[in-house]
Image 1 (cartoon, rainbow over the protein chains, first blue to last red):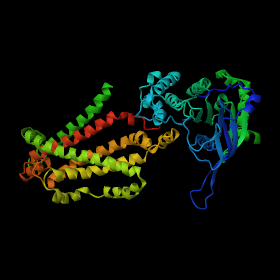
Image 2 (image 1 turned 180 degrees about the horizontal axis):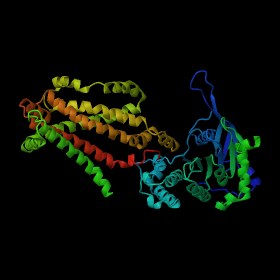
Image 3 (image 1 turned 90 degrees about the vertical axis):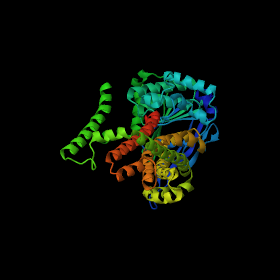
Image 4 (image 1 turned 60 degrees about the horizontal axis):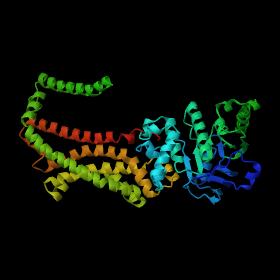
Length: 277
Length: 255
């Protein structure tokens, strides 16, 4: 449903295209629960825009407000300041054409794998033969076609997260929002999932906002990385990742990749102690 | 696997045999008269001799317990749904429910007998009363404790309140409904027997009283065995339902 722009789009032509997503001074303050206590600033105002088909990583330490920002973009959390616009429309709540992947697979244990994937379609009243066909295609794509009738508890952690990915993709979302989806997986599974995500994104042209606390994951996946400071969360660096797609495992060991990792790490204070010593 | 099964079913059997042996030798060694505590063999003989009457009276007790439980389930689950679904009803009735949990419902039995007579209705009412609260409280607790991430999922796919309830909250509460039922069904048997104790001329509770008054202790034990069979049987039935619902339990920790 969303024709992808070629990611090799030249800078000149993309400047004429309206951005797909606009964050205009988006911030979040949690008001103090007790009288006299100070309000907690979770996220300082962020302004940013991204194009259709882009993959943006939000990178930062735990509690830096990156998940809060993702939820605000998703319309699942109300911003305290500013506004979010996706495709020219202000986001005031979750949208039909958004897909969300959570930190945990969050599968409903009493449903089969296929019924879990079809859950959004069922809620939207579009659980027809076409939806079923698409769900089975997606399961095929992630290598789980044989498990359509299994229960979630019969699957491994990585398999469950693939099912969750299928569930987010089944309505053909124009925007895929992912909240540290691979954080709980082992290193090898995690790398497989990253490649799977890049494949899916290449095939579907979906725009993706991806939250992670892994420097290498953020860079490996993204067109652009927003680096966040510790609470109160603030964007401290914006790294353009001009590495060609398709990306493969060998990229992780290239000097260009390492240089970007170095820059992101410096922003996050990885080298802080050593420099002071 | 086979070894595991042997230990799981074999060891309880060994425990039972040891208990019966201890009972037997206690009676023999201390020369306990049969009117106080009959030997296991005597109880077995009495049970076999009286099996017709034990089964006939047991059937009545079983029906009283079962009907009481079913009534408690049929009325309790919708009430729990109403309480969990409405903030007003919740504030009005939930504290009250918790408070009445601590009231010994059995204390109401004499009153119920006055209201409903000595027929099956009063037994059913007492069984219902004791079974009702665990079902309501556990179901309401289950409905109020839907995992937050499931509700997050519902929000993300724009499920309305009705869909969230039927497709998320209620199924997620199933383990609570079953665990409440497990408590309720054993309580229902107790409720029925207490009803029979207080005023009845049928049922195992009544037969037990009759046997006691005739100092027919082996028959009293036969009644106890009958009650144990009913209690265990009903519990096993709920446990079987629990097993059939295993998908609900197979993955309780985060999807």
